[in-house]
Length: 344
Ligand SMILES: [Zn+2]
Image 1 (cartoon, rainbow, N blue to C red):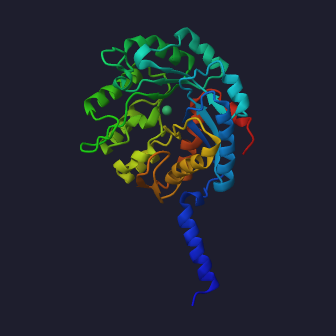
Image 2: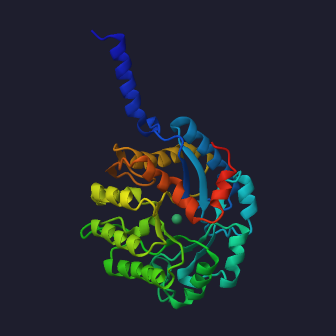
């Protein structure tokens, strides 16, 4: 005969199963999290929705998503920086940005020091695969190490302007599963080596490469990432849009990388504008990434995608680095900004 207790248990089980990720409660409510790779732009209703989403994350999951670094996007954000700060109640720091394969950089080296002073967090450069954006017959700037960029990188190095979430390549999976983005490994490595040349020429330039520098889709790429971290002390990566690719690599290898180089890896998602009706979905997207990093649960999908992977169950000190300590060290003014916020 079914007892009242077993009915409760079964009901509870069904509830948990149906609700899936919404049941995750973080063990680390005290750790603030900074999403360093976002495209909140200067779309103010969306920014207000992010604040509401933040409240939901805290109430439902105990998660303190404290701040966002806004990389901008097509809508140029440099004239809007003060409004973005005010509307976001100080929780969004904004970058200047450029999209360079076609037209080159539009900002001027002589303006960089002023941007740092005005409170921009960094300079986002999208220099992804040129073939993705160039029209047939159009000659653009193929690689990030093009000499045309040299005066800019020099100015940034001098002014302490961070090269924020620089995008140079698309994901290149192993033979037989290259993926939809970059089927050509030769082109992929030309793009990556271009970034390495920039690091060689500018040892003082602080670099955060977007998307794990896309060196997270093959186990040998992870070894190359180890080489990059060890060789270039100012080289970092963010995790934006990488989670759904982690099924492609050995979990122990990936975990080992995070453990050894936790001072170089930053939390990020690649999230964009947010409609009010999409807030619950956005909460779930964020929860998946935190659950993947904090537990050894099987997690379906990351911020994007539906692939299954086993969480990394990282220790608290590693999570603290990835969630906020590295960001506070890297982006000028962020630490001061964060110290002015309410704890929650
Ligand atoms: Zn992005």
